[in-house]
Length: 93
Length: 157
Image (tube, rainbow over all chains, first blue to last red):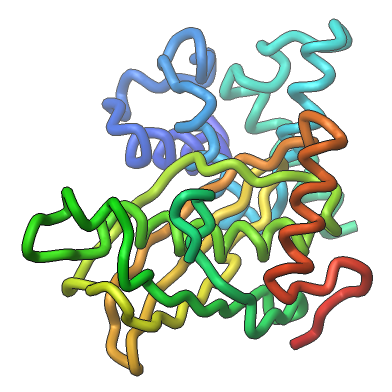
């Protein structure tokens, strides 16, 4: 799996004290790993720093609230990895 | 400080949005009912209120950086260290620095000193939300002015 996923998984494991081998690309950060919104802020901080981006959490949350997206699109880790890759690419463009 | 109104700082003495930093001052009241219980015959400023003083200082920085359009709410306090006692009447200098400006959250480092001596410090996380109502937004602007914070133009310190 991509290095982006590995970085995210390591962040989650360290930040939330979750066994690294229980974190897979198919894991849903909230539904499977039990990460609550406050813990996710710590994860977002670490991700923002690691990749030099700003995860648009408020935008994603609003899209889910409006029914325009599902939580899977943002919080399943393989999808989160893709979103991060897109943000990094956009930053470099 | 006006403890009855949960106002833990007296004035904002410095703010620099470019540097993402802020400084405030606070004088612990010489008398307050809090000291009757904390503690009888040995009045001390409660450590949790020192944490609140740091949070309020850092919070005003977040308010200013959001152009008074959004409200920071305390979400987490980490690595809070209370290094020594603070007594009634003592004058404190509080400083805070924005560490990370996230989407809907902010992380700050804050510290309190007394005559240059470190008193306490903490890393403080805020959730940033829209003001729940116009009255609260108005109250925050009014309080900011009373504390000496310019609410109209960016402050560069």
